[in-house]
Amino acid sequence: MEPNNEDNVSFIPSASPAVPITQITAAPVPGVSPIPPPSFPPPMAPIPVARPPTFRPPQNGGAKASDSDSESDDEHYVISEESKQVRERQEKAMQELLIKRRAAAIAVPTNDKSVRDRLRRLGEPITLFGEQEMERRARLAQLMARLDIGGQLDKLLQAYEDDAAPKEEVDEEELQYPFFTEGPKELREARIEIAKFSIKRAAVRIQRAKRRRDDPDEDVEAETKWALKQAKGLALDCSNFGDDRPLTGCSFSRDGKILATCSLSGVTKLWEMPQVTNKIAVLKDHKERATDVVFSPVDDCLATASADRTAKLWKTDGTLLQTFEGHLDRLARVAFHPSGKYLGTTSFDKTWRMWDINTGAELLLQEGHSRSVYGIAFQQDGALAASSGLDSLARVWDLRTGRSILVFQGHIKPVLSVTFSPNGYHLASGGEDNQCRIWDLRMRKSLYIIPAHANLVSQVKYEPQEGYFLATASYDMKVNIWSGRDFSLVKSLAGHESKVASLDITADSSCIATVSHDRTIKLWTSSSNEEEEEDQGGETMDVDL
View (cartoon, one colour):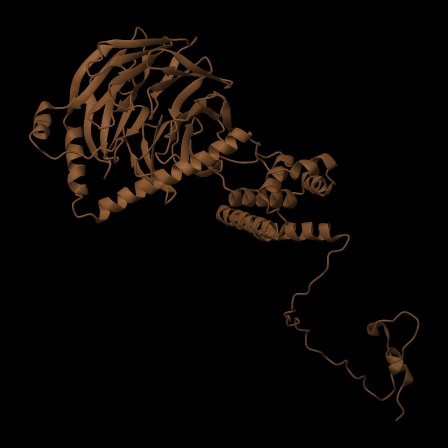
């Protein structure tokens, strides 16, 4: 039986459109029953197959596609508030990490001068309070990284262009010069003389320290106890009015027989000890208030400082010897060099100066403080000088080289007074933060912090022989005596009715003089019982004159 060609029509490919099978019918064959069409089971749903995710690079319509995807996600998922906060924290952490990575990769100058210049060009402060060189460089790196990430490259590129721009020839020539002021020939000679003087004094001090340490006859502990006992027995011996205006300074002569006081009236008076009732001389030449007075350590001369911008050198008979002019603002304190040949003055013009007392010439104009300079002191060897100012710093200077060798930071308010210990390596400072700090020059740090008074500390002074005790005067109307060994309070001298401006101690430590804004001079001496014990052969302190 031949196959019917008409039955195979649906299987022949043709270019014409396909015709459904249901529409094709075969002609019936006589004598043969028609074959029913085959029955097929209903189709089943296809099994889903997991397909791996594929990466599709973004195209022109990528933004629209992502928007549609996010819209579809939002239709199916709702983000909780907690999830949003977690996402924000993650984004913030990633941003900080990115800034740190960028800051580590960005090129930052290592020269501190270049760092300051870059900060100045970017409109940022070149330095912050207490900021060191490495901290300043890290701050610049963070700033540059934030500008780079934030897209604010204009400032950054401009800074790079400024750094890369060629400097003018004048600037290059100026950079070749070191930062110092060339001093006169007299200053060089003075430095040499100070060096020779200090070597001899240091040798004597070291020899004495070795003897006190090695000699079995030297009982340092007993001497310290005796000196502290004498200080604990200090009592008010006499009091007298010193002037019609508040008193500002006082100083003993080297032999302790004369006391000099100065006041806001501009007058300096010399009093005969021990009762300060007889006036020896009255020194009048300043046009403004007198701020300080000090006796020479080698002769009978004394120096005064005034708000009229001058310091003057006098003889004890009232004769004016020299007038030191040059400061641009009022003077604060004055101090003699241990050799007695030079005078140091501090001023509100942010400088302190050193003068030759024989010629009256200005030998040194020393800058270094950012604000007014107030306190000044010379080491007993004569090699070092210390200055303090309203910038809350105490600086130590080497007079032999002119360098600032130490900068002591710790006071949070202006430092008004400094003094060297006779041991040569301790420095005491007092200021408006009501504290007295002891600095160790060997360790280059603060050794003790004494909460000395309830008001500002106006004056600090070591006992002049061995530094057995330290005296501090304050505007809380008291003078406190502190042990030089452990800096514990030994005695508090109360008696003034107003601010205590200054104090001084005699060479043998037997008397302390204080002056106050209540216009009075007060002398504090040891009690009579202890003096009797001394006369009966008790222990006495060895005094080197």
